[in-house]
Length: 339
Image (cartoon, rainbow, N blue to C red; front, side, top):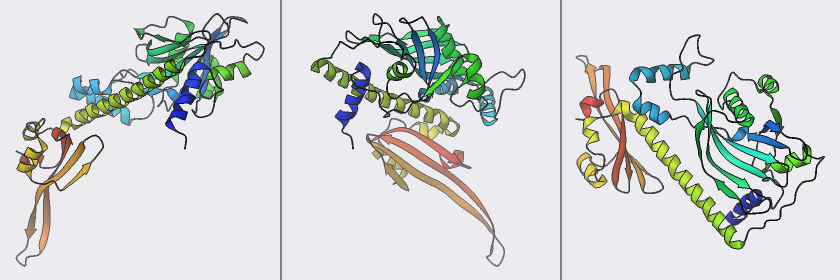
C-alpha cells in the first residue's frame, strides 16, 4: 500500500511538472478548443470523468411550491426529452468540470488549471478556483469568477461540451455530437494532459524546460493546503447531505418532535425510553430508531382472528455529541401516535 506522503508527492509532481504523468488518476479527456500557430499554440482540454452535478437541489426544495416540486419529480421519473412547449421544472441544471488550458510558448504558462461551473439553463460559465502553473516561477492562485456569458471561443465550446454531454444525458450520443461541435477525444491522459499533448499532438515542437524548483518549505505549505482543502470538501459534503436529508424529511415533520431539536439526548430518552435499536457512527453521531403502534384484530365468536389492522409509526432520531439534530417519521398513524 502506498503511503500518504507518497500519494501527496505524486500530486505535487503533477502540479509542478516534476514527474511523468501516471495512470493513477483515470481520465476521459477531450480537446474542445484551440488556437494559434506553432510555436504559440494553445489547447483547451476537459476531463469528462470530472463532471459533477452542482444543481442547487436543496435550495429548490426549500423555496419551491408543492406544485413545482411535483412537476420536477414527474420530469425526473420520465425518461427522454421534454414535451413540446413543456417548461423544465426544478433547479437550473449546472455542472462542475475540470479544465486545463495548455500553452506551447515558453513565455506563457505551462497550463492553467481551473474548475468551471456551467449553467446549462442560462448558458453561463464561472470559475470556482484556478491555478496558473508557470515554468520559471511558483504557481499563482486565481480568484474565482462569477457566472458570465462565454467571453472566449474556449468558454463557448465548454458550454456546448457540458450541456450536450451532461453527466446523466441518456439521450445524447457522443459519437454523433462530437464531430460537428469540434471535439477531439484523446482518452486517458494520466494526471497531467500536458505530457500527452506534447507526446502526441505537439510532437513537431520542442517543449520548454521547467526551471523552477519549489523549496522544502513551499512543498510543506502546498501539502498543508491540500490537506485543508480535503477537510473543507469533506465538511461541505456533510453539510449538503444533512441539508438535503432535512429537506427530504419535511413531508414527515411532527409538531411534538420539532420541540426536541436542540435538546439533550438523555432528556429525550428519559421521556421516550430506550430506543428499539441505535447505530453509532464517526464524529459523535448516533441514530436512534423507535417504532410505535398497535394492531386491531377482528375475531369471530370462536376466537379465530379474521382481520388485522396495523397502526404504526417509525421514528428516526439523529443525534450528534449528545444533542438532537434532526428526525424523520414514516407510517400510517404518525399524527395520532406522536402528539
